[in-house]
Length: 217
Image (cartoon, rainbow, N blue to C red):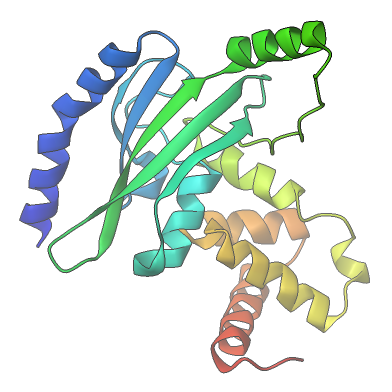
């Protein structure tokens, strides 16, 4: 099975360059191997998100990993990078012959200029409307920085002020977003929350047990 997955990755490597060449400098194509989330980028063409080969997956990729074989392709979604670029993307999952998800082919198109022209033409025509602000997505070669951003998004309240239910909800939410697919994440989360690694493992285990049984604390 691993040989089959390796063959699929190898076959798609040249496709990455072909797609990027077709759409030009506003396009970036990334081939991910989810078997190694900390260094999932195995091929890349174009430079929209600034990543390189050996770089980490984004928040979107971690979410896909968390969903496992139940994950589905996400097409034509719009996000904004932390540098302000407006990016339209499609994430197409790679599956082996058993249907197991093991990677993804991602196409990212910088539509910042197109969006600005569209807004200008709309204003000139008197029909401009303010679009909803797309979510900011963290792209980076360092998986720790991606996990840190995801942790920051959940730190609306001090850990010390959360009751047991709130703490379990926090760990369940992080788990659903794929944070714990990263090997060092449990230590990173424990350090950020100011708790021991053993406590972090305990909360993660309890949150998963609660999710599996559908129970509530």
